Length: 265
Image (cartoon, rainbow, N blue to C red; front, side):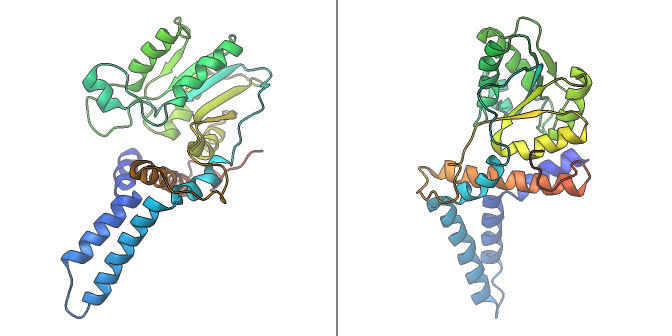
């Protein structure tokens, strides 16, 4: 039930949804004597929404997440394996169109192409089933398999883990499939903001990995002030960051990770 609850509450607690639902709720029920308070609450919700659109709120929230595990140096040394987490495929659109359609996490699928060219001996594991609550959605691996074959990096040797529905299951099922040996050096490829939770989950599963973050969305600096280029990007960054903070909290409270905000060690 954790998976189902996480999806439902994750949707309801998205910042934009919270503000819009809150503003709508107070506007529909302006009880006598409380109209002034209801109006102020609605104004506050709309002001926060405007701040997300006109100020780099998303950047401020993303920087601590994306800088927690910096990219490794260019000389990676020995690499025995690479685990790539799913989440880059738009499953609904891909299924409807019949070909791969990616989202803002597309770098998760692109980075392994260069990595395998530099480390052809490394084993590659893709971990991702379907994170949708809707039945009958085609799994990510179906589309990733064809993409990597077209890119020339999958000649039948790539392992696909297609049962996982969340980050916890990514770690557990990837370890079962990869069977990493003591002393091996495995890279973990996922979005930079998702890396703290991902590393913590893999540690909990006793699968030691080296963080290889991709898909950065922040400037990397809290002091970088700018006006977001688009409403979609501004609100998307806030939602991505809050999704990870809520995910860290939920995973910590349910014992899926040992540290509330994991750090390199």
